[in-house]
Image (tube, rainbow, N blue to C red; front, top):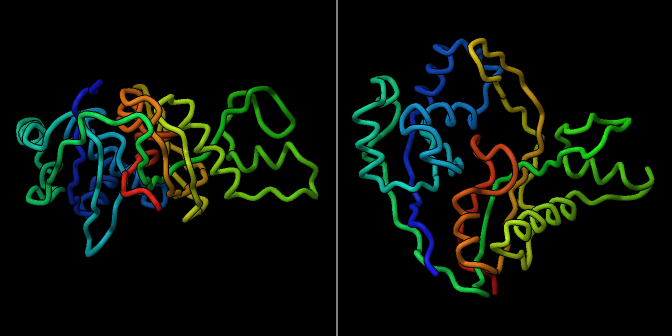
Length: 248
């Protein structure tokens, strides 16, 4: 069974243009992160969720290379921006760099695929406790540490690998065959409230890059997983599954 078509899209955005846009929005630079800046620009250029999930592939020579999944081919994206984007928004990108390809229309049950993903491995606290309020967002590693005696060792890589494996399995689209933690840092990210009066705050979240191999369980559910992404903060550069050849 085939899924709805979607595309892998790449575009270069000028870093200085993102900074200038942040200033126009009244955001001091110590309160912004690249994920938020690109989230804001992508929505202004292409419309809400047109390029989501996305990931920053690289930052070189004043350009930020963005990869994203989209329901729209590049000609439609270019036409939308040409018609509706404000001049400063349109000028922020190198439109000659806009490229795209159609993703496969079908996947096979049992198909092995390599992956790489930048995720925010957090969980929601299920009940009120001494360390966090019910419903608050907590680093999955910290949550795991709180469940064992203080002297017990909790390996961050093991926790994040299990977190990602659970997320893939819950999607019903794939299971993780193997995975490893390639990069980790505690990142400060900007989040703004909605409504007429918007306030902003910086919050600290875990940022982890994992790679490995997954196995497709349900082809349609797997396509949905790719288009949706994994975990929280997918609108801000987290959760995109980039595919690559599987490990031997």
